[in-house]
Image (tube, rainbow over all chains, first blue to last red; front, side, top):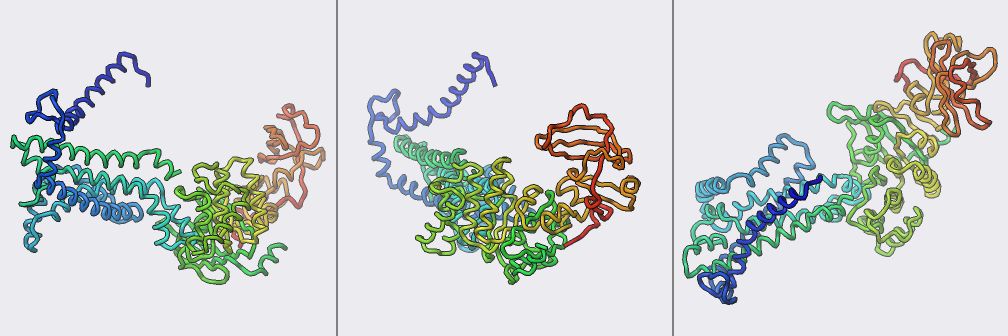
Length: 272
Length: 349
């Protein structure tokens, strides 16, 4: 498509404006985590790592980080297992309600978090509570897994559709049993899809707050919850900034890596 | 004659009453077939005629709805692909994209726990056999279509299977390469002494390479025999038309031309433009020059449009000038092949 120079410049400007609007505030958080002034005077007079040390020393923040990592790892592991299983079922077998199942698996990512949260909260209390299992890390992992499964499922299903089943037939034809075929052919072919899906799942879980609010129960604080509760305490503000910076980094990194592994150039190797 | 000799050999592949349905569709409709040891056997037919399904039934990728598959005298109907002593060269080659060429070729030996040193050596030999020495370290994606085709062949041959199944292996290659690979495949088959079951829709390929050909139509075998017998004595109008091209005469036209009742086939190259007064008169409708041969389309006065193929071995006739001219067409009695009337009434196996 050809655009007039004026249109091209207008589009570039709009693009720059949009990206600026998204990323400058994030950058501000990162810079302010080193801002020597307690009230974030701008521009910063002096830079300091004091707040980072303070954040590290804060038991609450450290504990929240640990909880978040645990929850994200648990949700990712669950998503990897269930997402892969469902993707294989949907790809390999024709069964009654396959399309419906596919929709039901994908739906949670579109459902409002607050609805998922309220639903899980009441379900957990009335079912698991009866069994004597209170809310805690497990309920958070389950809550996050509902939407984390989607990323793994989508990635793996897309990969399976692209590679087809002829490679597995070739493997069986050459004398490999089902386990050998999985180990030498199927798994290597979906490995990068698993990695991409898993990293996205991790990132989704790590910074989730709405569902977490309803499933965490008393006494469990994830990083986003910790930020939220400390946001309005003025003397905690610098530490909140640091924690926010950490949250940004830990969320962006997996997505960036996932993008690299899910990129078309990588896939060219897989399908060609 | 050759058919007789084949039947006295031990049978490597025996199909009995083989049927396969997919839902309401019958892909294979009752196949009985015996393929001899070391035979180059082709399954020829249009797409959807069931030939690939038969191949997949032999390989074990599909389970038959009815009937049995026996390999080397042993019933393998219910065995998984990895429990059968056959290997397949797939139409899309199905090379493992994440493995090097060497690893691809070694794959069958590796999963059967052959020692590493022997694996290396045999893979090297197999690659040499398909003239791909020194390509072992490459990824399949870095190779041309023809090279990938050879890797697929080496990957199958390295296992020294009793039977090699080939599913339109040359279909994706350009014409020159295809003709070259036909010769190579035939040579490899003769050297290795392996039974080849070769699926193709290309009649030239089937005629060129095979010891015997089975012609498929609608999930059934309509004729089995040597290339010569299938071509010279087609058992039905379908075979006459699918294997080579043919002029088919029936009804009043046949009575006028042959003074016989029935349906008859005459190959275009068996008809000559002649001066004999007894020959059938007609008018040249079209002249098509095609290099080594020229095709003439002639409308016979007896009421049939006939294709005549003539070798351009002598100085060509004044080609364009022949269009619209009156000619006479002649043929030998023995080249007039009686066909059972109707398209698919014939069944020979």
